Length: 194
Ligand code: IMP
Image 1 (cartoon, protein in one colour):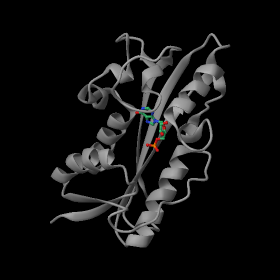
Image 2 (cartoon, rainbow, N blue to C red):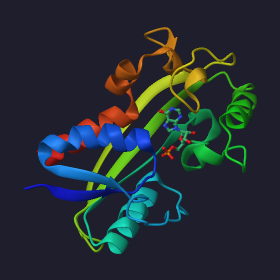
Image 3 (cartoon, helix red, strand yellow):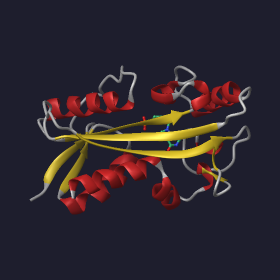
């Protein structure tokens, strides 16, 4: 029997990627937009709190189990910033080019250029679920000033994978899924559900 699961996101790429991997486990993934669920607030200082808030909100309105993710890039030299503010690091409107320019500017005076992407996934069976299923992934790299590559999105052209000598934007979609914070979190979630 298939179980409808709401994805607390309207990102078509995430819906396709998550939906494909969850289908063999009997989940039929629907985006919250398809169910006319408005986006939840993300007011918290941690990724897990924001993901939990999004999952609960989608589950409360739909009456269905829900899955949410929250992700961003963290830079130790900047005290973990941009962190949960990654999408709006340079303010509104949310623009990758402005966010990247600010990050390159802010990191310039530090010798430690290390950075990592982080993703957390939270699944709730119902809005008051006392035991949400939580899985996460971390992807380590370092920041470079000059952008490289056309793939990916967000901070990828400045995120260098030291071992590969490539930025995340120079990887194919398959390579990125194999290595990325989001791919790791999704595989960890699938292991917990299996
Ligand atoms: P969201 O959790 O998908 O909304 O992502 C939050 C923000 O983190 C994005 O808008 C990007 O700025 C950044 N981010 C998260 N994952 C990635 C990634 O894989 N590549 C580049 N930027 C990312």
